[in-house]
Image: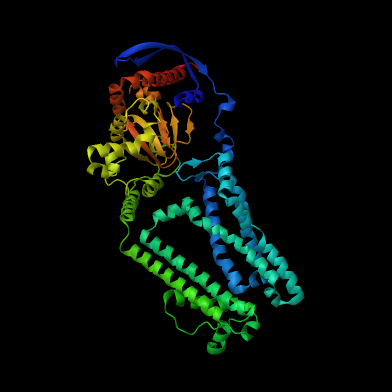
Length: 583
């Protein structure tokens, strides 16, 4: 079944002895009477992906955006808290401070709740298409393996560690924190760090993070990003340096001062009465500042020399950490230099456009417009402008978008290399770029068109990009045409009061392939209008180019094109009759 026939099942159509304008084999207008029965959709024919739609949490949901921020903060909390807990405090704060223990239980509960919330979260796949079917969401969640990772991450290890620590302290005292079973239960907490593997994806999908990034001055935002990275890496290295001292004494208590390690050596040579005292379970913060001091010295290559390794294990690990610090510092310096001096051309174009967009938004005389002007989307125009420019940077074929800012560009403008090739090679490359998409339109497929005809048609195609909320019926200069999606989704409507249907799995599929053959003035009010539900890219095949191709290839029109024309004309006619019928 072709697309328009399946669409007729979703739309209620009725037509009886209706006259429809057709084109005969000679391209002349003829008259034909078509009789069509009313088709009503049965419940089982309703798109399965719409079942349970009321339970779906979409990305632009305000509560979902707040929840994403809560999850981001929870993950970053564990990124700092868990290494500190293992390498510096040894679990002291959890066991002795009930408020801190309760706070960690709350964070763990957030992780647990998020595991099940993900079963109802719509998401965008790698092609930018919004996946909102409950079945597809759950299948993707299980197949990705993240369900099982997240289950491990929300294991109540904090409660286990607290209960184990309380039991041991009541029997042994504070030195029970060095017990192997207690340390093992604490190491199980590291499962929570698995969440860090997805933090970058969560932050990219967060609407609030994207909005803040787009509003901020890019140079300042990047400097803050690298500063945060330095702080995080310095913290991790400090905690690893603390673990090295613990390994030699198996305790942060008085036993640490009696064994050979870098902390006891520092205390014997540099300790001042009333100053930092890194030895003792309750002196975790003093120990942390000393470890962090060594970490920052190593990263920045300052090296005062007052904190030095003593044992062979400490020397070996210090060598590894200092090499790691050198590579990391070179990475940071290189990126900061790039931020200040030489950003890539794509980044510079993006930053320039975003700056111009922010300046334009500041000059808006009104921020709210009627729905018939701004579209049915509830997103503010300022946010749509910024998001479109960001999506152009991330998803556009063009380097930083078009310089002239036009929505449509010819194939040779999207791929300038075509202009410098020989005519024959140009046609071959055009066929490589458009062949699979043209094959999806029956009357433009290789069943009817030769390779040369497809290549010539491909060179007349245009690449178009649309932002979320954009509406499209015809291009102001190119007119109507067939849209073949390469990314994104759209909603189709007919007339003012018609129902709408979600268009799914649009990548590599045409829409309005039949209707584009109908004359511009034929039931124009009921010809399809598309509203895009996210950033979308399409291959636009102008109607004029299609008609020129069909005029040269009579077989394509006689065997296929005219029947597609007939199908579309019947649907348009029935829509008008239904709208005019008495209620």
